[in-house]
Image (cartoon, rainbow, N blue to C red):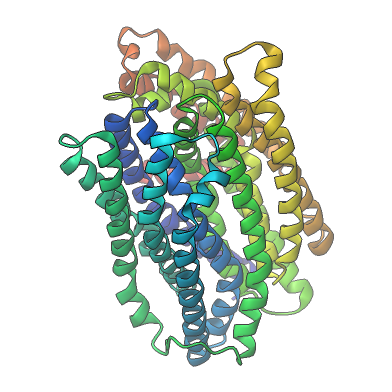
Length: 529
């Protein structure tokens, strides 16, 4: 078999893996958006209970993000996947068991400490909360912490499943978590006050976390036949995982600090800023997850399994990067354009119900527009980070993450607090400046990641011309789609979204099919189905 045939087969296999990831993510995100809509129906945007729940959830979620998917993907999968590729399943099982036991000990200690330290955490994370709003947030955090610990073990399961190329289950498992929360809202939403409903929802979240972990565990035990949970730090492979874990852990911590700085600044803004930020982020991460995470997650075990000479490995990584970046850009460019042009319709179609009004949808649109500034950079940056992790380099992304957080902090404060006063707009719109400033910092990080990797691997083909063509297609599609706003039924958010986003998508795909091979393949795949 010649190399070209092998490359084509590898690309097809990776494409299928990315499709499985995207399918799992799409399912979980759809259920997540349903959860968000139900939450908005009962809590609205401008209620103290909504702000309290969303702020509370971010604190134990910090634990999940520190020890969860991103850290384990960067430190555990490259080692575990390489052992599987070499046929050493027994050592792979020992590594997985040692990592699981280490996580269990660390998470148990941190959950216990977090519950005790909750009042002080609230003062740091949400200093703008006071009185009953603060007390409710403290109570919610204490309930949510154990659920966050269970989600960490769900991420451990994801690392094992991904390495065995069982990607759909690991990314679809969060459906259980969202479903439990939706059921809680539907059962208790019409009979309790908002503070009581927030507490019920916190317990529903813990139950959902257990279900998300439990649905993956049987498959993990079947695949990792030599899995034994015990603290074993003598293995060189385990030490490699832990050595890689530390800088990635710090890097994720730095990124999470940035997210909590955003939450802190939002808590100082008028009521609704925290919930508006959370709502926008849940919409914003949908294309990031579908088209960025799916490609990055599928590529990481493939890139980590590359063997051969140094030049052969570098050549393989360059090819994977070029293909992955083009696939990401094909979908992220129209997503950013849609957020900018049709964010009010998107937010309205997803969230406008019950206490959530059209004015609230416009507020979320402003935050989404700010988020779209760095959408492409942050998504492509994920793939570059995966390439570094495949090379067992976790320290370089850490340095760039630190710089991004520093920029986000400085720019975020200026854009969220003084800037609205300087230009004479309502202070609550400072949250849109917050997300836009984060996007600028994201482009700086992306440029540094790209330059560093090109120095190491050698420069690959430029995709700047390809991205420019995609933006041209997106602009034309926006012009055509905007005509849908003139239709008489477009005042209804769902019908308006269909009237604009439908033509927008058709025109973009039509032009994209003439400009890029990736677009043509996508259109042909859609026509076949």
